Image (cartoon, rainbow, N blue to C red):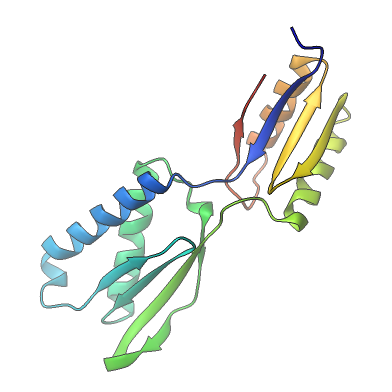
Amino acid sequence: MPSEASFDIVSKIDRQELDNALNQTRKEIETRFDFRNSKTSVESDDKSITILADDELKMRNVVDMLQAKATKRGIDIKAFEMGSNEPAANSMVRCKIVLRNGIPKDKSKELMERIKALKLKVSAQYQDEQIRVTGKNRDDLQAVIAALKSSNFELPLQFVNYR
């Protein structure tokens, strides 16, 4: 049995679940009556989602659909960084949603300060867009997990590799 226990704090999106949510959103756009004869589309790449809609109302409806589908599939809405609506060709509206993946350096400092503020015998290290928390007492590690789950942080956090 190791003398030190540890876990990693990560912020990742399950790509397969995101693809499923996007496909469900596209299918609903095709079948809904209010989107008939509409040029509304949802496109994605590794880092962002681009929504193209006929007007502001349809844009809000598509964003709501996407958020509902993502939530049902276990994707936290905090993973979506919503851009502003901007005009596109043919009097359409475009919105770009940036996907947050990984913990940036500035956000990691804030997280590590919260961990230190708990005054438990644990240490936190930032490495490769994730934070590794180690400690001798597993109860302290579980207290850190509980405290971070209860705090409202801007990023979706997952706790993995608990050993």
